[in-house]
Amino acid sequence: QVQVVESGGGLVQPGGSLRLSCAASGIIFSRYTGEWYRQAPGKQRELVASITSGGSTNYADSVKGRFTISRDNAKNTVSLQMNSLKPEDTATYYCRLYRSLFSSGSWGQGTQVTVSS
Image (cartoon, rainbow, N blue to C red; front, side, top):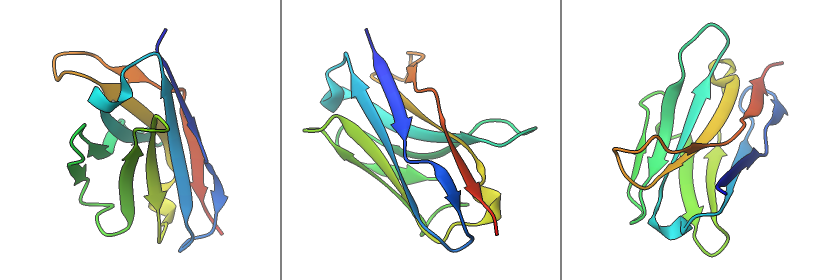
């Protein structure tokens, strides 16, 4: 069984920080690429950041310089450090892990991030 569980969401003020965590089990974690997506009400799900098994990272332009994705293979986790948060960052954040570009991947249930005064 593959399990992907996100945690760390919450309510923060603009300019604040939040750290999301994605914990995986049932896979050889070190071989997988990890991604963070987000989806706001009425909008399509968008890719926020990714990190490959080799540690290469990519970010959406909207979060570059503010968000940092990382992984800890010893703990089977992918994290997303979110700094200088803006109201536009408000969304449900999802973690996806995949081994191949041809696979559908495994998704977590999502964690809510709300940035508001």
